[in-house]
Image 1 (cartoon, helix red, strand yellow):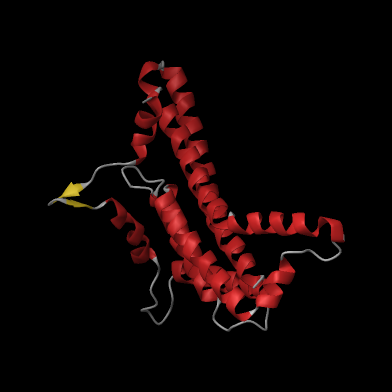
Image 2 (cartoon, helix red, strand yellow):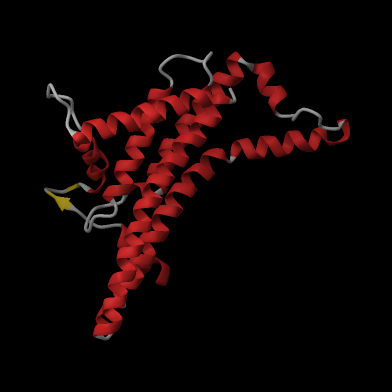
Length: 225
């Protein structure tokens, strides 16, 4: 019961005209993407264009020059969606959708499943060869096949849990520290505020890092096919 009341902080109930609007915060980030309407782009447009260009070069390097053109657009869009949702969760009274497995697993599982279906149907021999690393002794081959199969099967789960756990851990710490504020003295409360600001800066860094890690790992999984 304690755990239920503790994590219920992350499930705000927004009910307008009988409709739950919690998950609409997932799409608010789309309105924050700078649009190119002007002859001279704004600073935010230049920064965002530089980020996308850098990500495109890195993802293209990971996927390989011989793979399908435009494949990096999927992973750049994935990075953008996760990044905006992670940052939105830092604002008060905003539902953090990226801290729930129902969203993170919905992002990881279809991508991993599409990679697997494409690989096993079009590159079956390569997928079988990938189950046994090069140089494995013949005696260990059956065990390596089992280990590689299990590690391959848990990939979407690890992607989803990593993102959700990292996002909810910082929010949970901020919530627990914030609940102790009214019971503290003025000196302790001022130290608590400084600590909360430092944790918010750390959470902003975690929001960027986790979006990047999710996109890079998904790109690496796609490059193996």
